[in-house]
Every structure is written in structure tokens, then in C-alpha cells.
Image: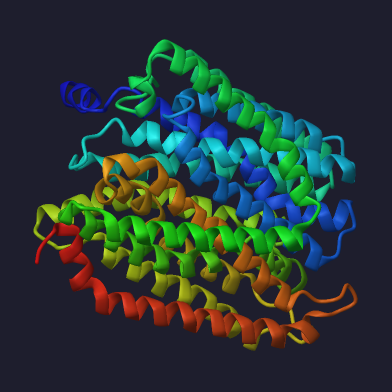
Length: 485
């Protein structure tokens, strides 16, 4: 008991409650992430290509707005204020989607995306502020928090599959509404514990604080109609987001070149290189709710031991691997490093890309062994998701944690948001890839399998190639991070 009390005393205040807040905050996103394409095609009767494009734009805004949220949080609104405001918009968005009409689809998504796009960075910033830059507990805290997020994904995916089998989409979105409301309640209960630590807003006087608060609230409300309009023009929006992403990349490059502190500049270079590697990983990973889900529905025998498997339940493979593997991986890495094994961030990134590539290469192998009707055995899809999930475990929580180490303090919010913007851009590339294999409704597994096999092979080999390139760069990147010449 004394040992347990000592360990609990070492946890920075607010870290534990953020685990549970993360779980409830994830429920709404898990529902939309796993069900939007199916809802659009089955309930609203959108074409598969249009549904994939909507899903791509959804991901782009959700992750892309994290950049803006990183700038707003701690400058215009405190991170806890922005989080609660964003969660309130998510609640309203899920309630709008529960009406089941196409018109409310766009309003619901606009409300939800404004909230989720701006408030996710707040959670990461509230957590990272509770550790000193060189605190060795940071990576473990993010792995635990990532496990909490995937508990939310597991619950959300499970309920989504349950309601989807009976096409009860209205009930599903009401469930998401209640889950997100629970996150608000938790945040309010622990309001003082979640206070910001060392942000620019804390240095503002009373008048400046009020003006910034009003401006932040106006931005929250004003973004909703903007997103509503953009969601109804997905092709133009896709191009706009890609150009914005290119502009952000250029701005970060200029920022790095002009930064005067040499050790910090070297770490910023490492950040930029690792960001390029992560773009490949997330472009394939984001195919899960679109291209891979459509492949699962049309070309895989979704049945195990006589039980029908809902498409959303497939994604629980990912959640289970993360929830079980996160704490285990944290403990294993800590033990290896204590014994002198040089495990670092570049090595983990390279390994994650290799695993992602192998995960995609498992799919054409499964297609090769498909039955006479072209249906692929579920074990091949299962294997692919397990490999992808282990890769995610290596790159995602470590990617968040490394921002506190690689980013100068004045750029942490922006660089955290930029890191998430990469996932948004990857979502558009995933939609592009998914569109390449979208088949007409009358197509069969036999007719679409060749296109899927070719695409999965190309993407898998591409990821493996980038992983090998990162392996070659590991010594150089490690020197940049450790500030060795």
C-alpha cells in the first residue's frame, strides 16, 4: 500500500482525470469516424465515392483545425475553456445528426467538427504542461492517455456496430451526444485541477483577458457556418486544405531556418523530417473508415464462429491492441532503456512504417486465397489491423509526447497543431486512395478484388520503402534530437 501511495503521489495533478475525460470525449468521434461512410451510403444513399470524399473532408477538418486550436488555446481562451466550449458544440452536432436528414448532416458535422477540431489539442496541451521538458514520465503519461482514448474508441465502435446492424442511426447519435456530455461534466467537476500552467494568456491583464475571451468565443461560433458551407463543396474544400497544408509546411520551414537557438533549431529539423514520415503512415491508416471499410463490407466474410461481425467492430481490433499494448509497451520500453538499450523516437517511427506496410501487404495475400465468390477470410483483415495497430502504438502517442521535447516552448501549441494537421492532410490522401477502388453498386467481390489487390500492394510497398529510408536516417536524426554534432 505504501508503494502504491508513493506512485500515485508522483502523478502530476490533473493527469489521472485527463485519462477519463479523454475516454468520454472520444465517444462521439468514434461513432462518426466508424459510421459516417455507412450512414451516408445506407441511410442517405450517397454514392461510395461521395461518401469517401465526405469522410476525407471530415478527417481533414477534424485534424486540420487542431493547428488553429493549438494557437487559440492558451492565447485567446484557456485550454480548459476551449475544451468545454468545443465539447458543447460536439454535443449539439451529434444531436443534429440524430434527426436523420441530409440537411442536418451538414449542420451536425459543422458543429461537431468545430468542436472536435479545436479542443483535441487542448487535452494534449493540458497534459504536456504538467511535465518538465526532460521529465521521463511524459512518454508514459501519453501512452496511458492514448490508452484512455482507445477505451473510448472501443466503446464507441462497439455501440456503433450494435446500432448499425439494426440501422438505428438516430439512437446511435443520441448515444454519442450523452457520451460527449459526460466529458463536459467531468471537466467542470475538476475545473481547478485542469488550470493552465505557463501560457501566454496567464500573462494578460484583466481587460486583455476579457477581450481575448470574447474573440475566442466569436471564433468558436463563427466557424460553424463556414464549415457548413465548405462541407457542401467537398471537392473545392479538398484542394483548399491541401494548399493550406502546403503553406503551413513552408511556414514551419522558414520558422526553422530563422530560429536562432542552434540546439532548438536542430530539434526542429528532426521534427520536420519525422513529420514527413508520419504523413505516409497516416495516409494509409486513415483508409480504415473509408476504403478499408468498404472493402470489408463487400469483399470480406464478416463472420467468425457463426457470429456476424458489424463493420465497426472490425476497428475494435485496433482499440484492443492499443488499450492492452499501450501500458505494456510503456513498461517494456522503460525496462529496456534501464538496461541500456538505445530505443529512440526515429527507430519507433521507422518500425511503425514497416508494420503499416506489412499490414497492407497482408491484404493482397488474402485476396489471392479468397474463396470461389471472391470473399476474403476474416483472418487476413484481422492480421492487417493488428499490424497497423502495433505501428500506431509506436508512432502516435510518442509523436504527441515528442512535441514537448522537440518544440521550443513558444512554438509548442502551433507545432502540436501542425502535427495533427498532418493527419488531416493524410485523411484527404486516404479519400483519394479509397476513390481509386470505389466500385459501382452492382460490382462483385470477384470483379473488384484485382483493383484492391493492386492498390494495397502499391501502398504497402511504398510504406516499407519510406520505413527503410527512415532506418538509414536514424543515426542523423538521433544526433539532431540529442544535440550531438
